[in-house]
Image 1 (cartoon, rainbow, N blue to C red):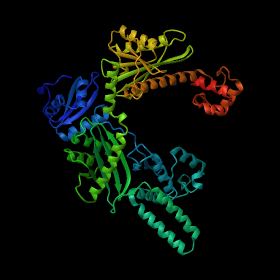
Image 2: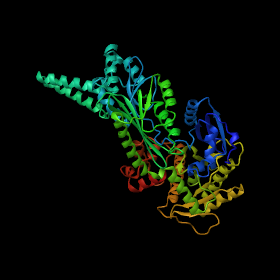
Image 3: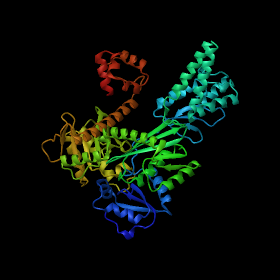
Image 4: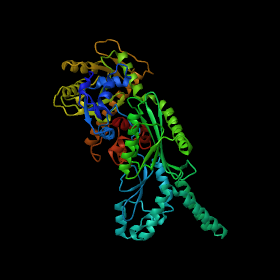
Length: 600
């Protein structure tokens, strides 16, 4: 993208949006003064990531706002909507598990990753097992219902409780074994426990156990002891952080050269009741003012914060973020950077945790954007390509004789596979088995769609920097002839499996990259993914074509053996995924080999 004339840029607060040649946002930023901010992207001394952003951008648009606060919120909303690849990448985008209590007459307790603000949610827990075990232990003491609405209504109609009532893990409100007031008391106890008041319940049980022992009622005392163990196990994930009973959230940031890692600790009544850990890849890791508000919004747009949030770095938009969070959660929320005292101690703990996260992240540099970019540049230099292959498309064909002929197109962008852009082809233009012609048809159909002005499929619209063919000279030649037919300048290379040799057009000898080469690793990764995707579609077509009761015939496997398979595995889909070792438990070795080969 050419440098903009400063007069073409507004000099007011707002949001700027860099767009690629497909008119899709690739970076969204905010500024107090758009003109002063945007011109900095065209500085010849900018970081490599900024230079790459500008080189990929085709145009830029602006959204004006009344003030910085509105610009901040608009930026966050647009990033969540479009998820531009050059903005902060939240590597850990999975949702964390919570213990949820529903908002209904007979409230239900269960573990969920989906937050509904109509319900009451406690957490997050570090992993699903911790949440399930915690709730399971608590249900032994406060037996709330855990069943879904259908199960509840079914037993209500039958007038008979389920097995959970018999083992004392449900109070059976479905058949009125408990009244509303008593049930609400159970619900309140669970809420209080997860709000950080677990010490109260544990102290209560310890006193009760001691009194029963003094009365020599040992059987009852032992029962209370078991309940006490359940309480201790239920709060095992809640680590004591401070001797006081404060509620606070702590965000520790560790800034690296290429990325940022953050740890957020949720502390209630002096205990850690949850945590979130994330990795980010901002354009410039030193610009806290740009990405720290996004981190805070990302965490607390769904997680209810305490009234006080502690952060490790100061940033310009603190007041605006406080106002928005206070508006969102309808109460006053403060953000501060402590300098001393128990809050500083908590912050140091979060920073120590973030530093450990940084150590682990550094061990996974293969997934790092900078590392991937260097690997792609290495690939360009090793194969003498026209461009750095930021978008690679890999193709493979799969068939069973002259039937179920399919092809796969797998996409890799910036060194990472993009499953949403995978496409499959069913070979239609000829009869019989011919891998060369199948490859030719597939590449022709793909390139033809690239040449269409009316194409709406985002994957087919994009121009690949490199096409990788799974095969040797024959398949490569067919693919190259199609590209030449459309008069396109797209690099194409073939990768043969046996010796991992690379074949280039108009070059007699194959190229062999070092086995430890990151460039080779990238090609092997996408080639294997294309092979897997083609095989999976081939298998789907075969299973669709078969009738489990009459049409499955495998040469060399008798009907009695097939009947034994059907007896254990009730569907063709199950049989197709059985391992060779499991087949040996049912069939002899020769038949097992034929069945395994048929499906794989």
